[in-house]
Image (cartoon, helix red, strand yellow):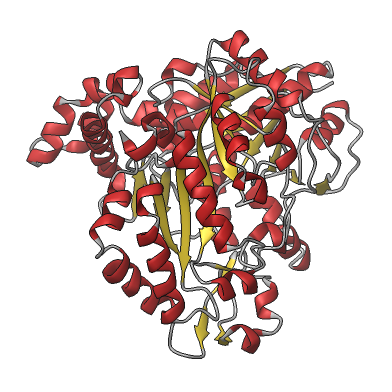
Length: 535
């Protein structure tokens, strides 16, 4: 049996422990595998937000804004980790902005890197370019996380004395730091077996196979849920294949014993949990889950999640939970609504579809009584023809009723809207604007975005039917790109949609007010603390 170490690389929001590590840890340990886990994302943020480290990059005469942020650094960190943060949105927002201003110091001399509270971008290197990933792995390039990796993380990895290190890369903004970290581990611990997995790599599955492309310095790459492949690797029964794939249903019970909950930047500790895996709808043509699902849909027996919420609350002394499903199934919502007494004193939030079950005011009221504080809902468009073309499967009449039910039940609504959809016209965008204005009093938080078209979307199979005049091929230098750029056949493109968003939507005072009360940078991860209306 090999000893394992699970690593979560930066950068994602440091507001709650990573669920992927917790689920893998529980599975491996329950099968007798000696396993440890390190949240290097939280570690990186905590390291980079130390006063002495910041002083080294701020210089002798930093601008006034930096001096002010440094002065308030201890109080800002303390506030964000205390219940006081949720009682005064203005103080909370100021503390967040101080911390984010300090993170901007790590942009480097040329400003090529940008770190914020939950995002990392590099203008000089692309996560879609294998040559850049290899350069980081070889130590020929570096990121702003290098100092943390060498000074703090590497000693922790050595102390764990693993024989196998598994690095999870779920989000695009983790890719570059993850390859740098993997290369460092390879050079310092050459005998350790290195494995990569996670949602991002699973989305690269077809490209990597088509290109017959390996990803040094990793010895293996896992597609899909990692539990079964890691068990095989630990037991020495995985065979010789470089790519390991798993589509089988796996466990839902997490082990958060690795997480120092008070260290996360959150007014109160929040634990993430899945009530299902995959997406039960999987028909939205703009969604990567419809193009290349990370895993088949599965869920435990209804009722299991309610019991698990209570178990985790007792074990870790928490009362807030983030259900991280792509969309919580109606069966799970029903069981949660029926578990009011079991869930008394607990709070939860998560994504749902505009399902007809939510048109029942009594049902929504029961959800609120079970602890539901906020629901995230993908509206995308206020034009019914656009919704139909996208395969959303929702009716605007139902949307209107659901938003009203949530408002009356005291459940905050976090609504997502996209512009720049293929086949959308300015008239369709005006319908979206009209819906937002009509329901402004019932929408608590709002996410406005411009659509990214997945590289394998069905919209590209019959482009002219969807208003796509042409699409650009993926760059040969960056063949791992997830999205395709396209030109609309009527001139309504991403630029036009962006202008409409900035001028027509954000030009409306009531819409602008909703956007402004969204917690900066932490957005939905913290919005549930502030309830309806943001305060």
